[in-house]
Image 1 (tube, rainbow, N blue to C red):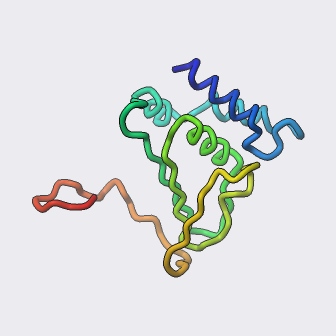
Image 2: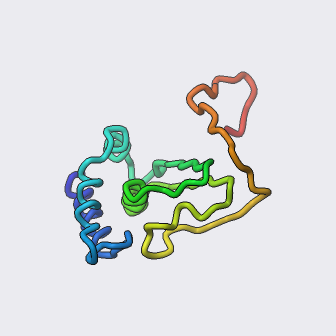
Image 3: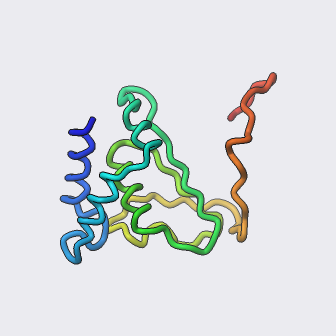
Length: 135
């Protein structure tokens, strides 16, 4: 798994998926970010079975802020590994594309824009129900 992670890190740098790689030293930030992955993500990668379901990441941006460089690196890296990634931006602002050097994202716009929304506590959603659910 370590070899796999290092191969994807090398691919991320070689393809220059993050703006600034090879120009202003951003590759050092990329290396530091990938080598310091959070424990939860490392565990997801460890139990990732490439023949079954891909791990999912849902990134919710409800404010008028931009995604950080570190989060952009993490998302690009997880995309290369095979994660399914969904950005939910109800404001409609272009807050995700700032650090990506190429089109990594397919954008879909549905419904009206919503502002100042609060993210619900998804840990308290009960999936133990007597009736079938689509969740």
